[in-house]
Length: 189
Image (cartoon, rainbow, N blue to C red):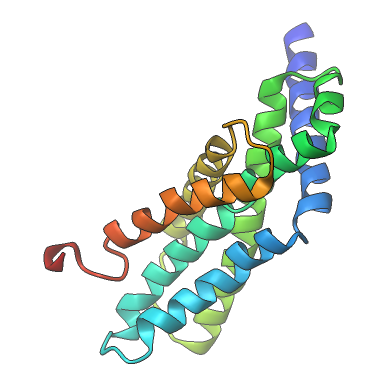
């Protein structure tokens, strides 16, 4: 019974940390820019003026949107909490650092999933796109978890302001998009 109580305490701590992060950080400007506006502008810059089949382009834009939305929360949480002095208060609570980290990952994961499910709903409503939901939903959940974990990992260096972490995360995320083959086929690089 003691193990079950510890697991329940751990899960409750993760969910409370994620809820705190959702309330505070979802409306911050860098999160909105990198999470919502940036994928839209990437769509405009890569699709308009090129002869790309939209049915081949849609999976790439969904993957890119999931990447940026899920990984945009992590680089903001830790630097802002360290700057405001709330990180030390969070560490003084009866939760472990693993709980805090998993709560940060969960907040980014939920943000990425919600935004991409909205995007996917629009795509399915506008286009008659064939979808295998049995493969799609677990893939979205796993990818969102991995991308959110990358965002939290990018927030780990000590920085005096969130803008320094955002520059570092952009330095990593932009080349990943361009060498991934989402927009430019790898054979033509």
